[in-house]
Amino acid sequence: MRYVIVGNGAAAATAVETLTEVDPKASIEVYGEEPYWAYRRPQLPEFLAGGVEVEKILIHPPAWYKERGVSVQRGVRVEALEPSAGTIRLADDRTVPYDRLLLATGAASFIPPLTGVDLEGVFSLRTLDDARSIRTYAQNCRRAVVLGGGLLGLEAARALRTLGLEVVVVEVYGWLLPRQLDRPGGEILGSIIAGMGIQVLTGSATECLAGRDGRVSGLRLEDGREVEGEMVLISAGVRPRVELARQAGLAVNRGIAVDSRLRTTAEGIYAAGDCAEFEGRVYGILPAAWEQARAAAQNMAGQETLYSGTIPSTTLKVVGVDLTSIGEVQPTGDGFVELRRSEPEAGRYVKLVLREGRLVGAILLGERRRVRLFNRLIAKQADVSAYAERLLEPDFEPSG
Image (cartoon, rainbow, N blue to C red; front, side, top):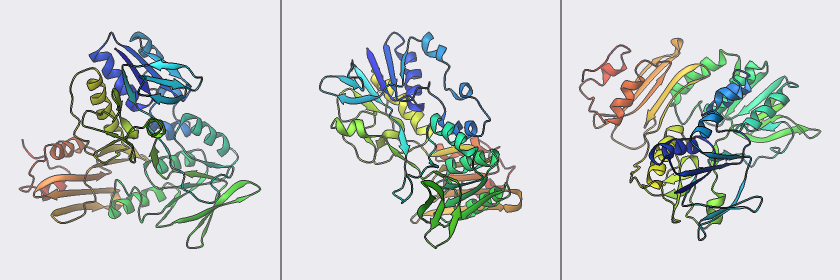
């Protein structure tokens, strides 16, 4: 069996791990646009800040692939998919045949259509080359503006602060991390970040970027305020990379449409990770990329595996603060009960979301010890109605 993988990120690496386990004698070829071995994108801000070298953020060292006989073609762009011929065509016009093909093309930074985004000094952070360019440019800057208060934006802001710059974060929503936190939790995090010397402007929509002599000089908000900065880092989310799939005639919505076996609408072609759309949803989170890639690889190798979706779960340190966000943390509609424990001065916040007595969502900010407990209760859809209020207590552990 000849497996070909287009893309070389987290989903691709997980698929390679799985294929080498379930079909160790197969031929596996990986084609990635970047000239690097697969690396952990969440560590790019740490690399930007100078806290880690490239070798330390690789998912696997080069020797790992060699030991398993996996061919990784780096710095190679795939020009087209040719489903009817069972081949892919590379930018240099070579064709590569496959028995099973996995699209793990990931996502690209979304750059909003604002006037001035093409000025010198405007960046996004998605690749190692982006991080290197930002670090070089920052050496001649005093003040930076980060447009976007999501996970990547906040970590990038902290990295730029570590490099010695004054930093302003501009977020259009009324609070930080609008995907992972509700307003009370976001406001507590905002206070913590302000204490680090990073200015935060929430509820602030950007009208345009300003410039002088072809270089960015800051941005103008819709309310007329101006925010100065010799560099602007745009962190406004990502968009799935679906161009190859669309050009080849595969079904594409926001992402590449896949079924419960991660199959696309073309025979022998699968998709996983940030480029894939399952039941109308593009997850855009690592747990989904890992789960989809494992299931896709197993199905490619003939081991029938059903994928039923991923419970959104984020556990990480954001600007050095422990944060976990699981499941439905901002429910809409009737039938939900929300419980909170807020300790702003201590930088802690816990929120639980229940539906019909069952725990369906949780936020833990500044609290890490009981993350596994809440993950387990949500995954089991456990009925916690008998002790729901006590779950807010930091030392309470239900039996069983």
